[in-house]
Image 1 (tube, rainbow, N blue to C red):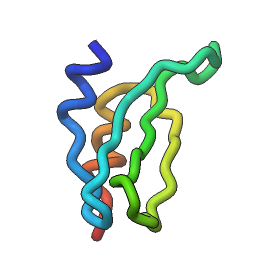
Image 2 (cartoon, one colour):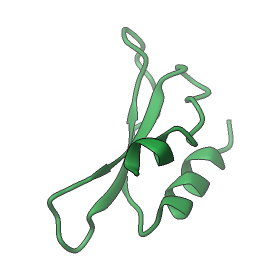
Image 3 (cartoon, helix red, strand yellow):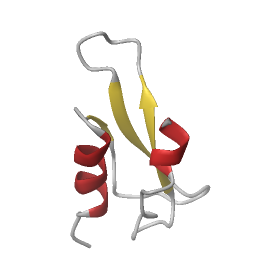
Image 4 (cartoon, helix red, strand yellow):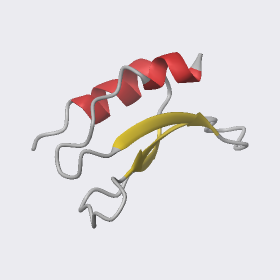
Length: 66
């Protein structure tokens, strides 16, 4: 389920890196989204964010202004 939802995330407009959903061990905030910069690029985007739903995380990541 997490892999399928990760495929809906756009690449980073700054470094062409990827983002992915992951499930943490934190019981209060189990769903997160993180940014994985393209190798060798110092990307200005720092992202590891709790999200309540896949839709919320997708809206945050895909709705960023460049």
